Length: 462
Image (cartoon, rainbow, N blue to C red; front, top):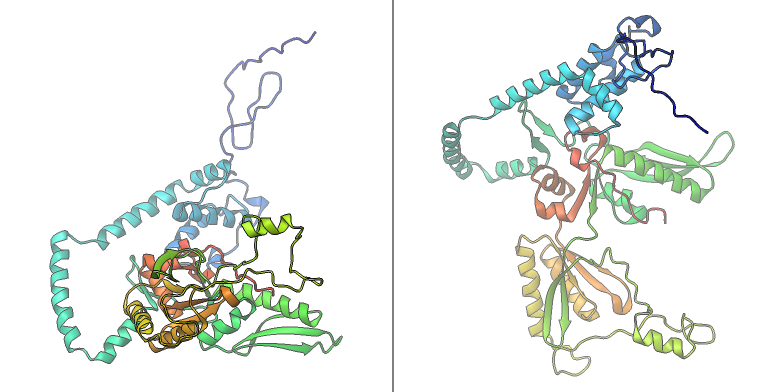
Protein backbone atom coordinates (compact mmCIF):
# COMPACT_ATOMS: atom_id res chain seq x y z
CA UNK A 1 0.00 0.00 0.00
CA UNK A 2 1.39 3.41 -1.05
CA UNK A 3 2.37 5.80 1.68
CA UNK A 4 1.88 9.55 1.50
CA UNK A 5 5.11 11.49 1.03
CA UNK A 6 6.06 13.80 3.87
CA UNK A 7 6.43 17.50 3.14
CA UNK A 8 9.99 18.72 3.58
CA UNK A 9 10.57 21.85 5.64
CA UNK A 10 13.33 24.40 5.27
CA UNK A 11 15.55 24.67 8.33
CA UNK A 12 16.72 28.21 7.62
CA UNK A 13 16.16 31.03 5.12
CA UNK A 14 17.96 30.46 1.87
CA UNK A 15 20.07 33.26 0.42
CA UNK A 16 20.04 33.44 -3.40
CA UNK A 17 22.45 34.99 -5.83
CA UNK A 18 22.07 35.43 -9.57
CA UNK A 19 23.43 32.01 -10.48
CA UNK A 20 22.22 29.89 -7.58
CA UNK A 21 18.86 28.21 -7.07
CA UNK A 22 17.02 27.62 -3.76
CA UNK A 23 18.39 24.54 -1.92
CA UNK A 24 16.17 22.45 0.33
CA UNK A 25 17.33 20.57 3.42
CA UNK A 26 17.54 17.20 1.63
CA UNK A 27 19.50 18.57 -1.35
CA UNK A 28 16.49 19.10 -3.67
CA UNK A 29 16.36 22.24 -5.81
CA UNK A 30 13.36 24.46 -6.29
CA UNK A 31 12.87 26.56 -9.42
CA UNK A 32 12.67 30.31 -8.77
CA UNK A 33 9.49 32.11 -9.80
CA UNK A 34 11.15 35.37 -10.77
CA UNK A 35 12.62 35.94 -14.23
CA UNK A 36 16.34 35.28 -14.24
CA UNK A 37 18.48 38.10 -15.69
CA UNK A 38 22.08 37.57 -16.66
CA UNK A 39 24.51 39.08 -14.23
CA UNK A 40 26.92 41.83 -15.12
CA UNK A 41 30.03 39.76 -14.47
CA UNK A 42 29.52 37.47 -17.50
CA UNK A 43 31.15 39.72 -20.06
CA UNK A 44 33.90 37.17 -20.71
CA UNK A 45 31.43 34.74 -22.26
CA UNK A 46 30.60 36.91 -25.31
CA UNK A 47 32.10 39.94 -27.09
CA UNK A 48 30.81 43.43 -26.29
CA UNK A 49 32.80 45.49 -28.78
CA UNK A 50 30.11 45.45 -31.49
CA UNK A 51 28.59 48.72 -32.77
CA UNK A 52 24.97 49.36 -31.77
CA UNK A 53 24.49 52.00 -34.50
CA UNK A 54 24.86 49.37 -37.23
CA UNK A 55 21.34 48.17 -36.45
CA UNK A 56 19.63 51.41 -37.41
CA UNK A 57 17.31 50.91 -40.42
CA UNK A 58 16.62 53.51 -43.08
CA UNK A 59 12.86 53.40 -42.57
CA UNK A 60 13.02 53.83 -38.77
CA UNK A 61 12.12 57.20 -37.27
CA UNK A 62 14.57 58.96 -34.97
CA UNK A 63 12.25 58.60 -31.99
CA UNK A 64 11.87 54.84 -32.45
CA UNK A 65 15.58 54.36 -33.05
CA UNK A 66 16.62 56.31 -29.94
CA UNK A 67 14.30 54.16 -27.86
CA UNK A 68 15.72 50.93 -29.26
CA UNK A 69 19.31 52.23 -29.09
CA UNK A 70 18.98 53.22 -25.43
CA UNK A 71 17.78 49.73 -24.56
CA UNK A 72 20.71 48.05 -26.32
CA UNK A 73 23.31 50.38 -24.79
CA UNK A 74 21.90 49.86 -21.29
CA UNK A 75 22.16 46.06 -21.47
CA UNK A 76 24.99 45.51 -23.92
CA UNK A 77 27.14 43.86 -21.26
CA UNK A 78 24.39 41.48 -20.09
CA UNK A 79 23.29 39.66 -23.25
CA UNK A 80 24.74 38.31 -26.44
CA UNK A 81 24.42 40.54 -29.49
CA UNK A 82 21.71 38.59 -31.33
CA UNK A 83 19.54 38.13 -28.25
CA UNK A 84 19.83 41.77 -27.19
CA UNK A 85 18.79 43.00 -30.65
CA UNK A 86 15.68 40.78 -30.46
CA UNK A 87 14.84 41.99 -26.95
CA UNK A 88 15.24 45.63 -28.01
CA UNK A 89 12.85 45.17 -30.94
CA UNK A 90 10.40 43.36 -28.64
CA UNK A 91 10.54 46.30 -26.21
CA UNK A 92 9.79 48.81 -28.99
CA UNK A 93 6.89 46.68 -30.27
CA UNK A 94 5.40 46.45 -26.77
CA UNK A 95 5.87 50.14 -25.98
CA UNK A 96 4.76 51.69 -29.29
CA UNK A 97 2.50 49.11 -30.95
CA UNK A 98 1.02 47.33 -27.93
CA UNK A 99 2.20 43.88 -29.08
CA UNK A 100 1.86 40.91 -26.74
CA UNK A 101 4.34 38.08 -26.18
CA UNK A 102 4.63 35.08 -23.84
CA UNK A 103 4.33 36.05 -20.19
CA UNK A 104 7.96 35.21 -19.36
CA UNK A 105 9.24 37.36 -22.23
CA UNK A 106 7.06 40.33 -21.27
CA UNK A 107 8.18 40.13 -17.62
CA UNK A 108 11.83 40.08 -18.68
CA UNK A 109 11.45 43.04 -21.06
CA UNK A 110 9.43 45.02 -18.49
CA UNK A 111 12.15 44.54 -15.88
CA UNK A 112 14.94 45.54 -18.26
CA UNK A 113 13.16 48.58 -19.71
CA UNK A 114 11.69 50.06 -16.55
CA UNK A 115 13.87 53.19 -16.39
CA UNK A 116 14.09 53.63 -20.17
CA UNK A 117 10.31 53.41 -20.62
CA UNK A 118 9.60 55.92 -17.84
CA UNK A 119 12.02 58.44 -19.31
CA UNK A 120 10.56 57.97 -22.81
CA UNK A 121 6.98 58.46 -21.61
CA UNK A 122 7.90 61.59 -19.69
CA UNK A 123 9.65 63.06 -22.74
CA UNK A 124 6.71 62.26 -25.00
CA UNK A 125 4.20 63.81 -22.58
CA UNK A 126 6.26 67.00 -22.41
CA UNK A 127 6.47 67.20 -26.20
CA UNK A 128 2.71 66.78 -26.57
CA UNK A 129 2.12 69.58 -24.09
CA UNK A 130 4.21 71.92 -26.24
CA UNK A 131 2.16 70.92 -29.30
CA UNK A 132 -1.11 72.26 -27.94
CA UNK A 133 -1.88 75.89 -27.20
CA UNK A 134 -4.54 77.47 -25.01
CA UNK A 135 -8.12 77.58 -26.28
CA UNK A 136 -8.20 81.38 -26.49
CA UNK A 137 -4.99 81.55 -28.52
CA UNK A 138 -6.20 78.78 -30.79
CA UNK A 139 -9.49 80.57 -31.47
CA UNK A 140 -7.70 83.82 -32.21
CA UNK A 141 -5.18 82.14 -34.51
CA UNK A 142 -7.97 80.31 -36.33
CA UNK A 143 -9.97 83.47 -36.86
CA UNK A 144 -6.93 85.32 -38.20
CA UNK A 145 -6.02 82.38 -40.37
CA UNK A 146 -9.45 82.27 -41.97
CA UNK A 147 -9.39 85.98 -42.82
CA UNK A 148 -5.89 85.77 -44.28
CA UNK A 149 -6.66 82.56 -46.13
CA UNK A 150 -9.75 84.09 -47.75
CA UNK A 151 -7.74 87.09 -48.93
CA UNK A 152 -4.93 84.92 -50.31
CA UNK A 153 -7.33 82.51 -51.97
CA UNK A 154 -9.13 85.29 -53.79
CA UNK A 155 -5.88 86.88 -54.97
CA UNK A 156 -3.87 83.72 -55.73
CA UNK A 157 -3.78 82.59 -59.38
CA UNK A 158 -5.74 79.47 -60.30
CA UNK A 159 -2.61 77.55 -61.33
CA UNK A 160 -1.02 77.89 -57.87
CA UNK A 161 -4.22 76.72 -56.18
CA UNK A 162 -4.32 73.61 -58.38
CA UNK A 163 -0.68 72.83 -57.66
CA UNK A 164 -1.35 73.01 -53.90
CA UNK A 165 -4.28 70.63 -54.26
CA UNK A 166 -2.20 68.18 -56.25
CA UNK A 167 0.65 68.35 -53.75
CA UNK A 168 -1.66 67.37 -50.88
CA UNK A 169 -1.80 63.86 -52.30
CA UNK A 170 1.89 63.37 -51.56
CA UNK A 171 2.34 65.12 -48.21
CA UNK A 172 1.23 63.93 -44.80
CA UNK A 173 1.49 66.37 -41.86
CA UNK A 174 2.41 64.72 -38.58
CA UNK A 175 2.79 65.84 -34.97
CA UNK A 176 6.13 65.82 -33.23
CA UNK A 177 8.89 67.76 -34.96
CA UNK A 178 6.38 69.30 -37.40
CA UNK A 179 8.09 68.02 -40.54
CA UNK A 180 6.07 66.94 -43.58
CA UNK A 181 6.52 63.40 -44.86
CA UNK A 182 6.41 62.52 -48.53
CA UNK A 183 4.39 59.32 -49.03
CA UNK A 184 6.70 58.19 -51.84
CA UNK A 185 10.00 59.39 -50.38
CA UNK A 186 12.87 56.86 -50.45
CA UNK A 187 10.74 54.14 -52.04
CA UNK A 188 12.73 51.90 -54.37
CA UNK A 189 10.19 52.05 -57.20
CA UNK A 190 9.11 55.66 -56.72
CA UNK A 191 5.43 56.39 -57.34
CA UNK A 192 4.54 52.89 -58.52
CA UNK A 193 1.27 51.71 -56.92
CA UNK A 194 -0.11 48.20 -57.37
CA UNK A 195 -3.84 48.00 -58.04
CA UNK A 196 -4.57 44.36 -57.20
CA UNK A 197 -6.92 43.28 -59.96
CA UNK A 198 -6.82 41.75 -63.49
CA UNK A 199 -4.90 38.64 -62.33
CA UNK A 200 -1.70 38.14 -64.33
CA UNK A 201 -2.13 41.56 -65.95
CA UNK A 202 -1.97 43.35 -62.59
CA UNK A 203 1.68 44.42 -62.76
CA UNK A 204 1.49 45.50 -66.39
CA UNK A 205 -1.70 47.55 -65.93
CA UNK A 206 -0.43 49.12 -62.68
CA UNK A 207 2.85 50.17 -64.31
CA UNK A 208 0.95 51.55 -67.31
CA UNK A 209 -1.29 53.65 -65.03
CA UNK A 210 1.77 54.99 -63.17
CA UNK A 211 3.70 55.61 -66.42
CA UNK A 212 6.46 53.15 -65.50
CA UNK A 213 8.10 50.76 -67.94
CA UNK A 214 7.24 47.07 -67.47
CA UNK A 215 8.41 44.07 -69.49
CA UNK A 216 8.61 40.27 -69.37
CA UNK A 217 11.11 38.39 -71.50
CA UNK A 218 12.65 34.96 -72.03
CA UNK A 219 16.42 34.54 -72.41
CA UNK A 220 18.75 31.56 -72.72
CA UNK A 221 21.25 30.61 -70.03
CA UNK A 222 24.70 30.88 -71.72
CA UNK A 223 26.00 27.92 -69.70
CA UNK A 224 23.40 25.19 -70.18
CA UNK A 225 20.98 26.79 -72.66
CA UNK A 226 17.96 26.53 -70.35
CA UNK A 227 15.08 29.02 -70.39
CA UNK A 228 15.23 32.00 -68.03
CA UNK A 229 12.15 34.17 -67.50
CA UNK A 230 12.81 37.76 -66.40
CA UNK A 231 10.59 40.60 -65.18
CA UNK A 232 11.87 44.16 -65.69
CA UNK A 233 10.80 47.47 -64.15
CA UNK A 234 12.33 50.55 -65.80
CA UNK A 235 14.72 48.22 -67.65
CA UNK A 236 15.96 46.76 -64.33
CA UNK A 237 15.64 43.00 -63.81
CA UNK A 238 13.78 42.51 -60.52
CA UNK A 239 12.96 38.79 -60.80
CA UNK A 240 14.07 35.77 -62.81
CA UNK A 241 13.50 32.03 -62.79
CA UNK A 242 14.65 28.93 -64.69
CA UNK A 243 12.62 26.01 -65.99
CA UNK A 244 10.12 25.31 -68.71
CA UNK A 245 8.76 28.42 -70.37
CA UNK A 246 5.39 28.35 -68.59
CA UNK A 247 6.78 27.44 -65.16
CA UNK A 248 9.63 29.94 -65.39
CA UNK A 249 7.28 32.80 -66.33
CA UNK A 250 4.93 31.97 -63.45
CA UNK A 251 7.75 31.71 -60.90
CA UNK A 252 9.35 34.98 -62.06
CA UNK A 253 5.98 36.73 -61.88
CA UNK A 254 5.50 35.43 -58.33
CA UNK A 255 8.89 36.79 -57.28
CA UNK A 256 8.21 40.17 -58.87
CA UNK A 257 4.78 40.41 -57.24
CA UNK A 258 6.15 39.68 -53.77
CA UNK A 259 9.01 42.16 -54.21
CA UNK A 260 6.78 44.97 -55.48
CA UNK A 261 4.17 44.38 -52.78
CA UNK A 262 6.93 44.83 -50.19
CA UNK A 263 8.28 48.08 -51.64
CA UNK A 264 5.12 49.71 -53.10
CA UNK A 265 1.66 50.76 -51.97
CA UNK A 266 -1.06 48.18 -52.71
CA UNK A 267 -4.72 49.02 -53.34
CA UNK A 268 -7.49 46.44 -53.52
CA UNK A 269 -11.18 46.99 -54.11
CA UNK A 270 -13.44 45.72 -51.34
CA UNK A 271 -15.50 42.88 -52.84
CA UNK A 272 -18.23 43.40 -50.19
CA UNK A 273 -18.60 47.14 -50.79
CA UNK A 274 -21.99 48.80 -51.29
CA UNK A 275 -23.12 49.08 -54.92
CA UNK A 276 -26.11 50.96 -56.38
CA UNK A 277 -28.23 48.39 -58.23
CA UNK A 278 -30.44 49.69 -61.05
CA UNK A 279 -33.07 47.25 -62.30
CA UNK A 280 -35.85 47.60 -64.86
CA UNK A 281 -39.27 46.16 -63.93
CA UNK A 282 -42.85 46.36 -65.16
CA UNK A 283 -43.42 49.29 -62.81
CA UNK A 284 -40.41 51.30 -63.97
CA UNK A 285 -36.88 51.58 -62.60
CA UNK A 286 -35.98 50.23 -59.16
CA UNK A 287 -32.84 51.49 -57.42
CA UNK A 288 -31.48 49.56 -54.44
CA UNK A 289 -28.18 48.94 -52.67
CA UNK A 290 -26.42 45.58 -52.87
CA UNK A 291 -23.10 44.14 -51.67
CA UNK A 292 -22.80 41.86 -54.73
CA UNK A 293 -20.91 43.86 -57.33
CA UNK A 294 -20.64 42.53 -60.88
CA UNK A 295 -16.83 42.73 -60.99
CA UNK A 296 -16.45 40.54 -57.90
CA UNK A 297 -19.54 38.38 -58.26
CA UNK A 298 -18.89 34.81 -59.29
CA UNK A 299 -21.83 34.64 -61.63
CA UNK A 300 -23.28 31.12 -61.58
CA UNK A 301 -26.51 30.75 -63.53
CA UNK A 302 -26.76 26.96 -63.50
CA UNK A 303 -29.74 25.42 -61.73
CA UNK A 304 -29.26 23.94 -58.28
CA UNK A 305 -31.31 21.78 -55.92
CA UNK A 306 -33.20 24.83 -54.62
CA UNK A 307 -34.82 25.38 -58.04
CA UNK A 308 -38.22 23.79 -58.76
CA UNK A 309 -37.36 23.10 -62.40
CA UNK A 310 -34.17 21.35 -61.28
CA UNK A 311 -36.14 19.00 -59.02
CA UNK A 312 -38.72 18.25 -61.77
CA UNK A 313 -35.99 17.36 -64.25
CA UNK A 314 -34.31 15.09 -61.70
CA UNK A 315 -37.59 13.20 -61.27
CA UNK A 316 -37.68 12.65 -65.04
CA UNK A 317 -34.27 11.01 -65.01
CA UNK A 318 -32.00 14.01 -65.71
CA UNK A 319 -28.59 13.53 -64.10
CA UNK A 320 -27.06 16.94 -64.86
CA UNK A 321 -25.30 18.63 -67.77
CA UNK A 322 -26.74 19.67 -71.10
CA UNK A 323 -29.53 17.80 -72.87
CA UNK A 324 -28.96 15.69 -75.98
CA UNK A 325 -27.08 12.53 -76.86
CA UNK A 326 -23.74 14.35 -76.52
CA UNK A 327 -25.00 16.65 -73.76
CA UNK A 328 -24.52 19.55 -76.13
CA UNK A 329 -27.57 21.48 -74.89
CA UNK A 330 -27.34 24.66 -72.84
CA UNK A 331 -26.93 24.31 -69.07
CA UNK A 332 -28.07 27.84 -68.12
CA UNK A 333 -31.75 28.80 -67.86
CA UNK A 334 -33.20 31.01 -70.59
CA UNK A 335 -33.10 34.64 -69.51
CA UNK A 336 -35.94 37.11 -69.45
CA UNK A 337 -36.43 40.83 -70.09
CA UNK A 338 -39.22 42.96 -68.65
CA UNK A 339 -41.03 45.35 -70.97
CA UNK A 340 -41.77 48.82 -69.61
CA UNK A 341 -44.18 50.04 -72.31
CA UNK A 342 -46.82 48.82 -74.75
CA UNK A 343 -44.71 49.11 -77.89
CA UNK A 344 -44.09 46.00 -79.96
CA UNK A 345 -41.01 43.83 -79.72
CA UNK A 346 -38.02 45.44 -81.42
CA UNK A 347 -39.47 48.98 -81.28
CA UNK A 348 -36.69 51.59 -81.09
CA UNK A 349 -38.67 54.68 -80.04
CA UNK A 350 -37.09 55.10 -76.58
CA UNK A 351 -36.44 58.86 -76.51
CA UNK A 352 -38.25 59.51 -73.25
CA UNK A 353 -36.60 56.53 -71.54
CA UNK A 354 -33.13 57.53 -72.75
CA UNK A 355 -33.66 61.04 -71.39
CA UNK A 356 -34.49 59.58 -67.97
CA UNK A 357 -31.38 57.39 -68.05
CA UNK A 358 -29.21 60.34 -69.07
CA UNK A 359 -30.55 62.38 -66.16
CA UNK A 360 -29.89 59.48 -63.81
CA UNK A 361 -26.26 59.13 -64.91
CA UNK A 362 -25.70 62.90 -64.93
CA UNK A 363 -26.95 63.22 -61.34
CA UNK A 364 -24.66 60.36 -60.32
CA UNK A 365 -21.63 61.99 -61.98
CA UNK A 366 -22.28 65.32 -60.26
CA UNK A 367 -22.84 63.82 -56.80
CA UNK A 368 -20.22 63.01 -54.14
CA UNK A 369 -21.33 59.37 -54.07
CA UNK A 370 -18.36 57.13 -54.95
CA UNK A 371 -20.30 53.85 -55.03
CA UNK A 372 -20.56 51.96 -58.31
CA UNK A 373 -23.76 52.02 -60.35
CA UNK A 374 -24.68 48.55 -61.59
CA UNK A 375 -27.27 48.00 -64.32
CA UNK A 376 -28.84 44.54 -64.07
CA UNK A 377 -29.42 42.07 -66.97
CA UNK A 378 -33.01 43.32 -67.35
CA UNK A 379 -31.64 46.03 -69.67
CA UNK A 380 -31.21 45.17 -73.32
CA UNK A 381 -27.96 45.12 -75.27
CA UNK A 382 -28.94 48.34 -77.07
CA UNK A 383 -29.65 50.08 -73.79
CA UNK A 384 -26.30 49.03 -72.35
CA UNK A 385 -24.58 50.46 -75.43
CA UNK A 386 -26.30 53.78 -74.74
CA UNK A 387 -25.13 53.67 -71.12
CA UNK A 388 -21.54 53.21 -72.29
CA UNK A 389 -21.84 56.36 -74.42
CA UNK A 390 -23.40 58.37 -71.58
CA UNK A 391 -20.73 57.26 -69.11
CA UNK A 392 -17.95 58.28 -71.48
CA UNK A 393 -19.61 61.66 -72.00
CA UNK A 394 -19.60 62.41 -68.24
CA UNK A 395 -16.05 61.15 -67.65
CA UNK A 396 -17.07 57.90 -65.98
CA UNK A 397 -15.61 54.42 -66.41
CA UNK A 398 -17.91 51.67 -67.72
CA UNK A 399 -17.38 47.93 -68.13
CA UNK A 400 -19.57 44.90 -68.75
CA UNK A 401 -19.34 41.61 -66.86
CA UNK A 402 -20.92 38.21 -67.43
CA UNK A 403 -22.24 36.63 -70.62
CA UNK A 404 -25.55 36.28 -72.38
CA UNK A 405 -28.58 36.86 -70.22
CA UNK A 406 -26.37 37.41 -67.15
CA UNK A 407 -24.48 40.38 -68.55
CA UNK A 408 -24.30 43.39 -66.26
CA UNK A 409 -22.98 46.90 -66.78
CA UNK A 410 -20.92 48.61 -64.07
CA UNK A 411 -20.36 52.40 -64.13
CA UNK A 412 -17.74 53.79 -61.73
CA UNK A 413 -16.05 57.08 -60.99
CA UNK A 414 -12.38 57.55 -61.89
CA UNK A 415 -9.83 58.19 -59.14
CA UNK A 416 -6.06 58.29 -59.41
CA UNK A 417 -4.06 55.98 -57.15
CA UNK A 418 -2.54 58.98 -55.39
CA UNK A 419 -6.00 60.38 -54.65
CA UNK A 420 -7.10 57.05 -53.14
CA UNK A 421 -4.01 56.90 -50.91
CA UNK A 422 -4.60 60.49 -49.82
CA UNK A 423 -8.22 59.82 -48.87
CA UNK A 424 -7.54 56.52 -47.05
CA UNK A 425 -4.20 57.14 -45.31
CA UNK A 426 -4.23 60.88 -44.65
CA UNK A 427 -7.85 62.08 -44.57
CA UNK A 428 -9.24 58.71 -43.43
CA UNK A 429 -12.36 59.36 -45.51
CA UNK A 430 -14.90 56.71 -44.40
CA UNK A 431 -16.33 56.39 -47.92
CA UNK A 432 -12.93 55.52 -49.37
CA UNK A 433 -11.96 53.35 -46.38
CA UNK A 434 -15.10 51.26 -46.92
CA UNK A 435 -14.42 50.92 -50.62
CA UNK A 436 -10.63 50.33 -50.75
CA UNK A 437 -8.11 48.26 -48.81
CA UNK A 438 -4.58 49.68 -48.69
CA UNK A 439 -1.30 47.93 -47.82
CA UNK A 440 1.65 50.28 -47.24
CA UNK A 441 5.28 49.51 -48.16
CA UNK A 442 7.59 48.04 -45.55
CA UNK A 443 9.45 51.37 -45.26
CA UNK A 444 6.23 53.19 -44.32
CA UNK A 445 4.83 50.66 -41.84
CA UNK A 446 5.85 52.80 -38.85
CA UNK A 447 3.74 55.68 -40.19
CA UNK A 448 0.59 53.65 -40.89
CA UNK A 449 0.57 50.61 -38.58
CA UNK A 450 -3.11 50.01 -39.33
CA UNK A 451 -2.38 49.28 -43.00
CA UNK A 452 0.35 46.66 -42.85
CA UNK A 453 -1.87 43.59 -43.38
CA UNK A 454 -0.94 41.72 -46.54
CA UNK A 455 -3.36 41.90 -49.50
CA UNK A 456 -3.65 39.04 -51.99
CA UNK A 457 -4.01 39.22 -55.75
CA UNK A 458 -6.82 36.96 -56.95
CA UNK A 459 -6.45 34.68 -59.97
CA UNK A 460 -2.85 35.72 -60.64
CA UNK A 461 -1.69 32.16 -61.34
CA UNK A 462 -3.92 31.75 -64.38
